Image (cartoon, rainbow, N blue to C red; front, side, top):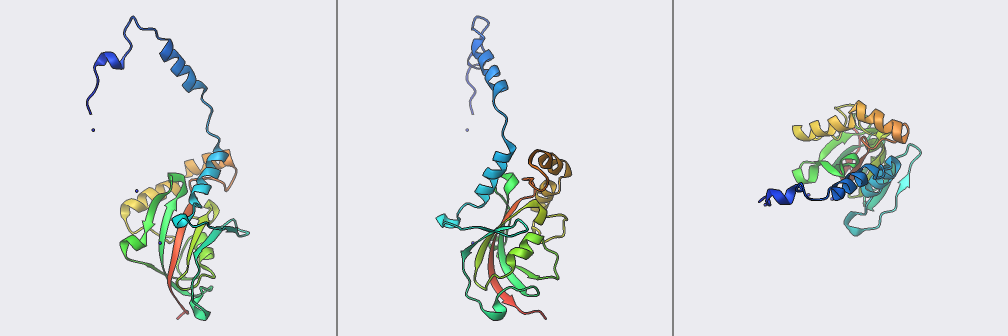
Length: 209
């Protein structure tokens, strides 16, 4: 919508007659290296998540809940083909985990199997439910979802269909130790672990049954 031959031992270790000052300098440099600023890391991660799709400049808006979204491609749907609070929506989604350097945990287009969900009926992460509202049939949108609007359980959509992908996703976003540590360093609700970026492509929108 990611060879080995070792040199001679003498080239790996200093000989007794060699000066150790070079090794001492290296150790001193490593010990004195500045710590990574967590807030800068968060800002860099969010900027990466919001990177333009296909070199297209995206303009993001932020809702009162903290959801960031940008339309990649406007849709053509009108009336019941616009997502409302009770619509049945068929869509492709590509999900990336910001705290894992943009690791892709779901890509329904690659699987050739879209998601089919009903608004206000199927359990989905709050950021997805909010971000789908107002989308038109044929439209594409990028969502950058803070942890407060992200996963809080293993049954919330979009759930990866691969067992391995599910395990890796949930052991990261639901890892309470990591969430606590990042919240303490960045402030409550600002942890990187739970931030996800979703690219949504709406295929079809239908009225409720």
